[in-house]
Amino acid sequence: MSKNKLSIFAFVIAATLAMLSSASATSISEHISVGGTLIGTVTLTQGGTGSCTGFASTSVCVDVEMTSGSVRVGGPVIGFSGNVNEGGTSIVSDVSGGFALAPGACGGITMETICLDANGSATTSSLLFVLSNAEISSGISIGNIHVAGEFCGSNPTCFATTAPVSSTVPEPGTLGLLGTGILALAGVARRHFRSRRDSAKAFEVASGQVGYVAS
Image (cartoon, rainbow, N blue to C red; front, side, top):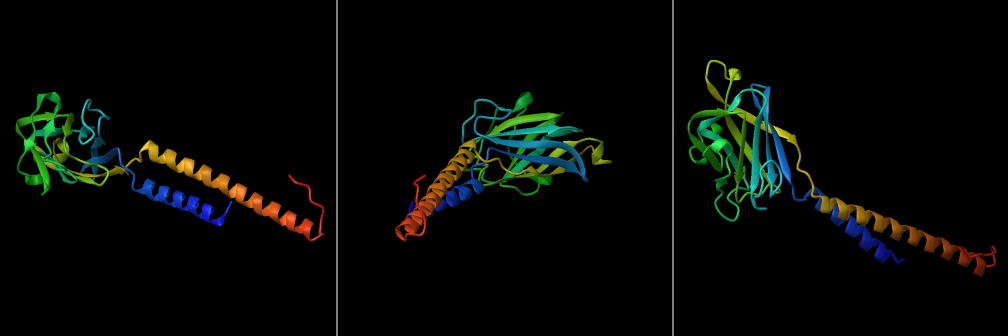
């Protein structure tokens, strides 16, 4: 095997590794906390998977699960920045519990690209909805979340912060491509070194140094 072909396969592996590092993400999870106390988790899942069902690949399922206290579904509820309003205005649909969310004022959520508000003063320990025209792979950040509980101190409600739980998950197809590339490179390298070994033996025979028996 020529050095040029070996170099080509090495380039393929390098390109695959680059693809792996920038692969499309399928989910983002973040802790919800107030004053350092963990009170829940919010998970964003791209396109047709996760806790939501039957939504488009250009949409994101948002799943807020509280382990303490509740989400305040009144006034500013949650906000997002980054790749929202991609290919059109992001619209909320399929909100759990019969709640209604719509773009509105950010208030204590802090300034985000889109803030979702609700009327009333209801609370819930679990909130699901679909956000259209959103893309996780190149980045969505989650703003503060309106919550209610004893952790708010003297106030009935407060705004919790979010922080990443885990990094984005590469698509299985990219991992398969990486594995195939590594196996191909290993095979090429084996043939390359075997060819060099046989050539060296042949040279020794031609030089009269040793006897040569083909393997």
